[in-house]
Image (cartoon, rainbow, N blue to C red):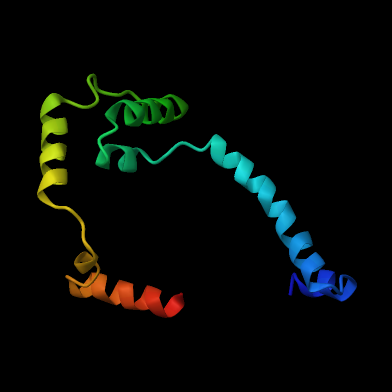
Length: 109
């Protein structure tokens, strides 16, 4: 319904597409300032960047953090887990719950 009013006044589909997508391009500028997820950074082994993100969040929330945030044992364990299980396409259908999610997403897309 949001598209109906502009489509009524802009008859060219190319100009309509440009008119509707141009404002969204400005949103991509904000991705420069968005930090990556701390969970993602930890999972790929970027502990220094993850610590910066978590520290910043803790400052905003006025929370106390333990020092050191990531112990050597934690990093060794995470590295072992990362090397032990490399994700594959079969992981999408391995468990019944994940299988249903995958099928659901296939139909949605």
